[in-house]
Length: 309
Image 1 (cartoon, rainbow, N blue to C red):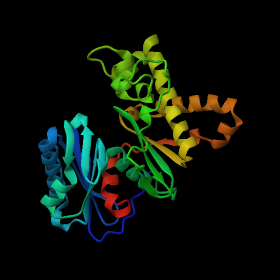
Image 2: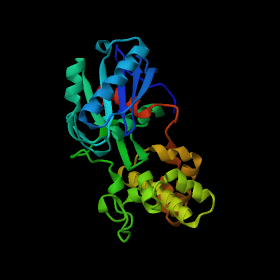
Image 3: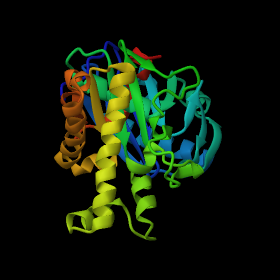
């Protein structure tokens, strides 16, 4: 999964991944290798997001020894709903509506493409697979739960840009817990925020819950079991709905490593034991974790204009 990305630009490309705590920028060389990368803390609000992005890009250009005018394009991945370069409802950045694409393009004078961060990561994960598969899902198991979709070699956004928002799918309609007051949605079981919500102890995070599970705490063990079932269910939804060739897991919870994939595969194995049809799909074999040593989302953002404009 660490094969270099193939690009055709005659000039380097820049990719930016804006998250809730940081802005990460990379320069992709003509051969697709990462020539430089730089991270800075993110500042919230419209002005803060724009300023942080400028800071990260200025720094990575200095590191690479290039000027912004020399790059072929800049791609930006950012949380929230994105259409036409406008970012909406990026609540963790205190952004209600921001025309980020126009603000950056006007300042830099180069093509800028802005995309939802999970979609950008899907592009990066697909290219890093480097094995010719054309239908791939990137499942972000982090603070929230969502997927980015590559179908027949194209990024699939859907008619309203909501393709892959599987965290809103109801897994248990009788469970009153859930973000935004929605009962029993998948994100409650398979995300960091959902785990903390189930645990319900102020000041304690997912790390604390998983540590308690390792120590044998019954409540924490039940939450961990629901996590594995939730991830397996997300894989099942993506496989049965889109029949993707591969599901790449990303996000903070992949820090669990093999424990996460093994746990999800165990759930899938129980389903396969009961259903010859599901067994024929080999869902567990389609799952892997994105390479932790690669800035997947920033690489994908750099490639947006090149292949998915």
